[in-house]
Length: 51
Image (cartoon, rainbow, N blue to C red):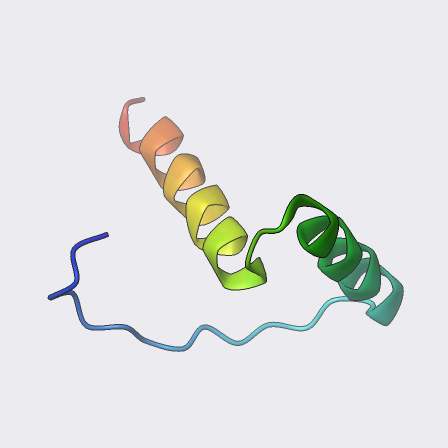
């Protein structure tokens, strides 16, 4: 992501247990939850734009 891109907040709700597991996995891998989610969304969009 370019540093000049404007960032926005995307709000969603997930079960607390899932959030806790996700946070733990990210911490174990030394990764930031926001970065992981951004990458997942980017991959999702790219896969579907190519269709």
